[in-house]
Length: 279
Image 1 (cartoon, rainbow, N blue to C red):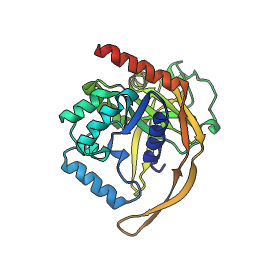
Image 2 (cartoon, rainbow, N blue to C red):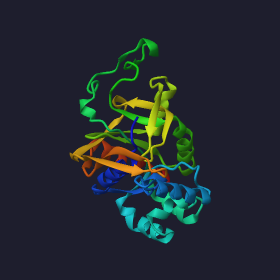
Image 3 (cartoon, rainbow, N blue to C red):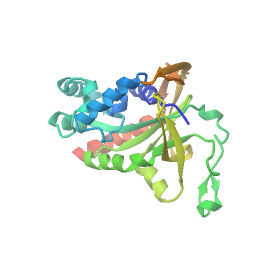
Image 4 (tube, helix red, strand yellow):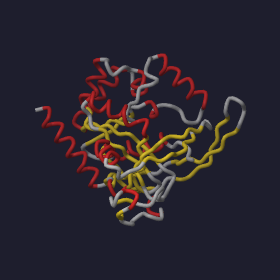
């Protein structure tokens, strides 16, 4: 069971991209602008999404753009009414189409309240597994850094990627480091039976718990995205639900990370491919 730290991880990733000279990132999906500390505010936020007819849509959490396109992108966002209006605006709108046409990469963000390097199987190689027919893997439910992809997100993310012709990567943040993987490659690993489904319980700040099927992709298959330069602190926090029930939880505060050379090379390669496709 874990408390959602989605906004924190998105902010750290956005800041890490924005420190680079060639790229910058903007929040795009609903979670980037929704409150996590006020259950009533969350309820009203998603009611507004429903009224806009966009409540059931799945969008990636971040969009990454080339730094050279920043002025044009900022102009489009200003015309749309600001970053906070993106989740409530249909992607069929011409300005949204113009915004998406500028995007180099889309990011689905995940996070875990773990120190990756201290997890028991970190640094251990994959081994042939009998249950996998001799394919490489680890024992069931290993305590190891993984990139999580929720089963319920696979189809809508695949559909979004195909519709907009923007590649999606999943970036997973831990306390001390982060990993990334292309959605296409994640689906290949799942299709090959190298990554098995598991049931995982998620708990939101408002206290709601849900059990979801996830694919926990071993970090061995991912690229190292970056590492913490300033460690976040762990702060005690709470919310009070509509019934007056106090719900305590722990959240990350502060901290910063820097993208790895491998991550920057990945961005450069995708940007080059996009340019070549457009020419």
